[in-house]
Length: 232
Image (cartoon, rainbow, N blue to C red; front, side, top):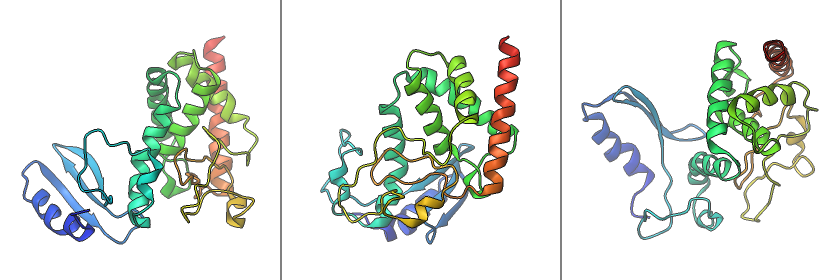
């Protein structure tokens, strides 16, 4: 509670800018998720800021504890959401090693086939992670290769707009918008909804359009056919 967003984008930003290990640093204060973008020792990093209403941050803090959201503003909640979603996904996956191996392959495939990135109307990293995690839940003892094969089998025939979800959506009544097509009319128009598992649940694929949905599906079908051919 002792550090403000202004401190993050002024004092901390200047300290980072003066660090010789930091390159290409820039701050984006007015975006949906305010952040500092930079490269540290050549590694691209997006830094977000969340101000928690606690006197000190301890190593044992559990960011998945929904109670920490009660007394912080919406910008901080959005900034925390990335970490909370990642932690929630890993907690819901039965075999993390198989999950990570399959996810790396799926991301490489999507980038090579030019269907990666929510900015362009496709799935981003979070959406692909949720989809791979869902397949891991369906086949809890499968290895990475089998998860990859089942990913293409399942997603190429998925009955959209039935959502991909890792757990039920809950509303804790913290006055935050939660994905719910029965309550929010705009949620009914999502073409390929992939729902984040941490409160407040959101659609990670809200930028997918009818044309990009068709393109994604055709690439999933192609990938499934290739894997079937190599397995036979």
